[in-house]
Image 1 (cartoon, rainbow, N blue to C red):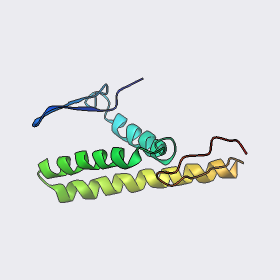
Image 2 (cartoon, rainbow, N blue to C red):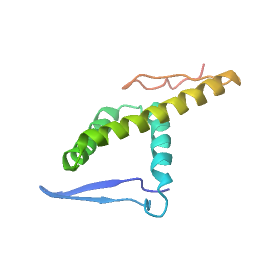
Image 3 (cartoon, rainbow, N blue to C red):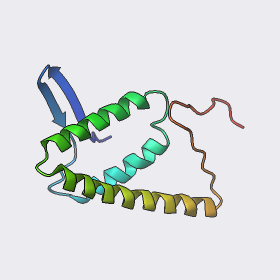
Length: 117
């Protein structure tokens, strides 16, 4: 198990961050984690706590943009990266379904049933 990011608040203005990844040694890990996280958010993240989890992820992104020298450029680049990952995932889903796989999508705050059908 690897820690993607740990964010701990020790006091009012004492927030600390940790990760097991070294982006300087392996920059590709950023896109890899983004793609894996996207898949997780489309599947196992949904289960009742996603409202708070996604809100905190967005709070971290807002803080990053607020501290950025050029937030508009950063948003544009993030949008391009997100569109690329979304396109890849949609293509993978199509291929999976074409090969006979079945994908069931659950909306946020909806858990899959406990019985098998």
